[in-house]
Length: 291
Image (cartoon, rainbow, N blue to C red; front, side):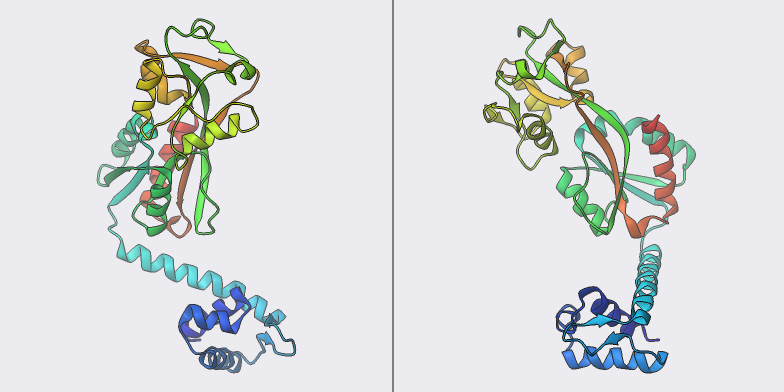
């Protein structure tokens, strides 16, 4: 069986359209039909039901489609494996995750795999996911779940509590805990809508009568400094504000009637799953962060 015939059949089986397959593959429709017929002649079976106006797979066609998907995926893995440097692992993370969680993980990984170079990148969630899809990163660590994508795999490593930070002199600062209803009346600062931290804020306060944030800030460091200066409150993962709280620049208030948490998620490219460098790093991540 010729590889190009299998690719063409996979596209037809996936789209259930000769026309759409021809567009994706930049072939003439007649070429797509000829390749499917050549495959049928070689196998001695009919793969498409041509008695219907729409393209449908025959039972033999369904079976071949399952094998074709696996064959093409394996070929892609092989191509990727021989084209990437073998002694490097690339990990990306949100700034907060990278600063607070990665150092211990990477130190442990280097002690176990001293011959493997480590490359670290920090960026926002969208750019991290795009870098994983391109193969520029082996894995990325973020808060929240990745967007739906058949090419990506994800795993929750831990759950991080969400807390509210307030200025040190705020009336809630001395209480340490407050019901969510009390917080609805407070002015809040938040990150921009493209940021995962803003999704957390919107998820908690979307059903309330709370107004829009009084300010939008792109940097978590600047957001914390604005809270310390008395501009308002902010909802953030606890690890993102721990250092500020220890320096008494802000006070941490826990929401007492709602268990607010966000997952710490590891995301990687499915076809990269067999990469031994990635497997080693994932093992360390699970042990260090999963507890």
